[in-house]
Image 1 (cartoon, rainbow, N blue to C red):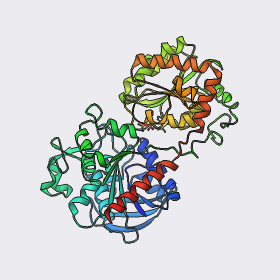
Image 2: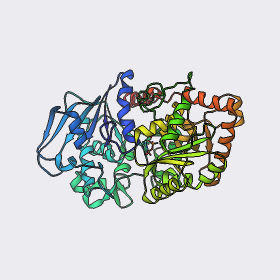
Image 3: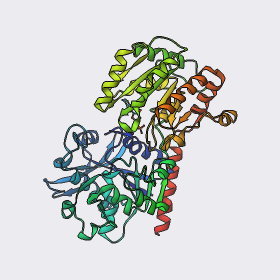
Image 4: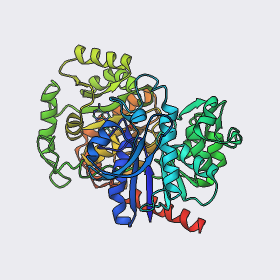
Length: 479
Ligand code: ADP
């Protein structure tokens, strides 16, 4: 089976969020499923540099303006990539979407991604004719729509939503320039509340829709979490499912992680204490092995509920705990976090910024990782926490529900619990902190939570199997 993955990000080539982790990790996991996958990416500077020379497999006299453009195929840091080498669209430094509200021509940049994907889907490259075209997020959302309006034979299509908050809406006046017929501009086409909706288009025309956890798949069909798309998602309910993300268990392996002070695994947990000591030293926290050390690793945005963590600092400190913070984003939140760091040295420590080695050391050193998201499609940090023996303390939303088993009396008695869940509010977070500290003081139960967490399969094996099964279902249906 041949699959074309269409994405605007793929780790380690270009990353702004979890989408990159997923698009970067799935190809390796698919090898065990007998799937040949290529990843279509915009030719950003980092992608073209990683490709080196590559092979020119197609030339366009122009692509949404500009001069000649090419498709360049090759291996880029382990990924089988087809890059759209269109300098007028993608040869720009910095964030792939541009500063502030994004580049003014993002409608064309990502229409180009989808247009090329649809053409490859129709057999433009004889050496690689996909059975399935898998589009990720709004940037690839027009792909199923182009395939639909082109008419004729087409491959099966999957649209995956990594975060419904990002939808890609653009002016209806662009319609003719994007190459869609006038009749596409209806509620049954790509029109979306008076705009052209890129994600909406994908959701409307893909054979299957997936999102990154079963609970988020249910939540987004409600008006509270559907962000305007719940009606369409309900209408397409039989095509919608949730497949959890995994994490790269080679990159996240506490037995072989160069960022750690001491390696450990589920059978050799003692060295974990050395990582707590190293983290406390690194962040200027007092060297107290008995203080429950809470951590938060996150983008600073309303979604992630970091404001609630900052508000809950007194509750953590009153319980004898410490807090380690790593993150960046919203300026007001960064300022508040810096104030807390300055005001409470020894008890609150951290780094405001993006730092992968510290993220790894934090997962290995904190006792509990707090994830207080207001909504969370899947979440990756709690999966890393499980693997590193940090007990996840998570809001009861989205993928956090599906990946953490709350330490309720029944789950503890059944020896199944892996963490703590709470309803996303400050009061409930404070109650969860108190509950976590009580569990921390009960050494036998705490050890069980950690062991269960570390025994949880957070790899891509099962998700890859599920995507493969979905692809096969679509192919069987269409033949
Ligand atoms: P998002 O909504 O931001 O994609 P996820 O939990 O799905 O949230 O994925 C975030 C990823 O980015 C995780 O791998 C997490 O460890 C990492 N991350 C987030 N903030 C930072 C940071 N400041 N430094 C290092 N890694 C970070």
